[in-house]
Amino acid sequence: MRALTRVFLPAVNLVVAIAIASSAAALAAPLGTGFTYQGRLMKDGLPYTGAADLLFRLHDDATLDNPIGADVSLAAVPVADGLFTVELDFGTVFDGTALWLETRVFTGDDPDYTLLTPRQLLAAAPYALHALNAPSGGGSSFWTQSAGDLTYNGGGVGVLGGSSPFASGKGVFIEGGSTLGGLVFAYDYDTGSTLPLLLNSPGGMVGIGTTAPGARLDVRSTTGMTIRATATGTNFSPVNAAIMAIGNTGTTISGAPATGVYATSTDARAVAGFSTNNWGVTGDCTSAGTYGILGTPNEGIYGSSPHVAKPAGKFVCPTNGIAIDASAGLVKVKTLQIMGGADLAERFDVAGDPEPGTVLTIDPERAGQLRTSDEAYSHRVAGVVSGANALDAGVVLSKDGRIEGTAAVALTGRVWVKCDATHAPIVAGDLLTTSPRAGHAMKAADRDRAPGAVLGKAMTALESGTGMVLVLVSLQ
Image 1 (cartoon, rainbow, N blue to C red):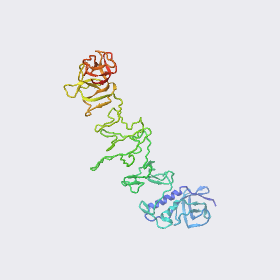
Image 2: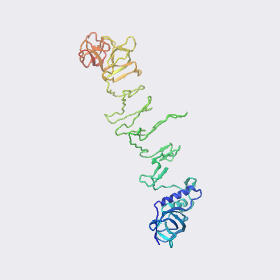
Image 3: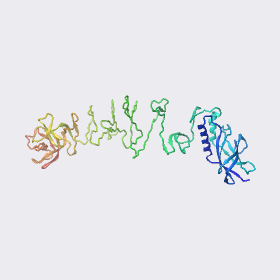
Image 4: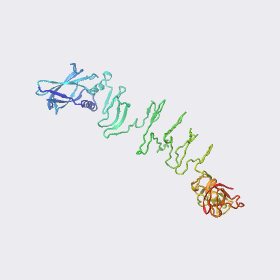
C-alpha cells in the first residue's frame, strides 16, 4: 500500500477559535461542544484529492493508548488538493487536561485504515468550551449571551496575554503580557490609526485613587506627585503644552465664565512653576482689556528671589507700552532705581505739538497750560519737552493719564535741549535761559536779568549756531 502522510496547517487553532466564536454569536441556544477542524492529507508525497473515511480519537498522552470519550467516524469526507474541513464533537471532555488527537484515514484502494503519526496536541482554543460551560471545574455557565452581547457574572476576568496587532477591525482592546503594564487602547486596524478612548462616556465620573470621584476626572494620592504630564515640543504644532486647560463662557441663560486653571492649597503653594532655561510661570493676554496674571484679594502677586542680582519680579513691554500699570492704589518701594531715564517730568496741556527738546513757558492766557517759549529771559520759563536724543524721562507725573494734547515736561534732571549760540557760545557750566528764538535756550550772559529766568546749567558745549545741548534742568 502507498504511504499516507498528514500535515496539519498552522492555522488550525485560528480556524477553531473563529468557529467557536461564530457559533456563540449566531445561536440563541446554549453553545455545543463541537468545533471545526482542518487538515491537509498527503498521499505518495502529493496532495490527495477525492473522498476519504476519517476516524478521530482523543488520548490523554502523546503515545500511550488511553482513549478519552467516544470515537468520531466520518465517511466519504471530501478532500480537495489535500485540504479537508470537518466538524468534530467528542462531548464534554475538555476539562483542562492536555489531549492529543489521533487520526486514521481510509481511501478507496487502501486495504485498511492507516494510522497517521504523530498524534496532534490540541491547542487552547477547544478549551474555550470548558471555560464557557464549566466555571470552577464544572457546572452552569457564568456567561450570558443575548443576541450580539456576551456578559460574564462569575467574578473578575483577567487578561494575561497580548495578541496585537490584529489583522483587521477597530474598537477597544485589552491586553496583558507586556513588561510596560496592562494595556487598554482604542485602535483602527483597518486604517492603522489610533481612535479616541472615551472613559465613562457620555457624562459619568472617573476616579483614580478614589472610590468616590467628585469631578469628571478625580485623581488622588497620599504622597508624591498626583499627575505628571510631559510634552515634547515640535515646530509643526501650534500648541506645545504638557497640560492645556480651557475655561469657556456658558452659552445658556445660566452660563457663566469658567476658569482655565483653578488651584488651592492650605500650607503650600497653589501653583509652582520651575524652568531650566525659560520662565517658571507666564501669563499672556491675547485681547485688549484682559490680564496676563491677575492676583486677588490679599497679596495679589508675590515674588521672592534669593539672588542679589536676580529680580523677584520682572515686567517687560517690548512695544514701549506700559509694563506696569498701578493707576489705582499705592506703590510702595524701599529704594527706587530708574534705568533708561534721566529726568523728572510732568504732563501738561500744551498748545500745538512741540517736539522733544523744546523750551516751554507758562501760558498766561490759559490757566495751567504751557506754550513754546519765544522771548529772552522769560520769568515764565517752565521746563523742556522730555525725550530728545532718545533720553527718556525717568519719572512722568500725570493727573489723568492723558497723552493727546499734552507733553511730558522735564522739571528737573538731565535732558537734551534745543539751544541757540548765535548770541554767545555755550560751554559746560553756563547758566541757560530762554532765547528769542522760539523753543530754544541760550546762555544767560546778563546776570541782572537771569534771576527767575534760569532754565538750568549746560553739561555740554555749543560754540555757534543752533544745536542740542545736554542740560541739567534746575529752574531758578
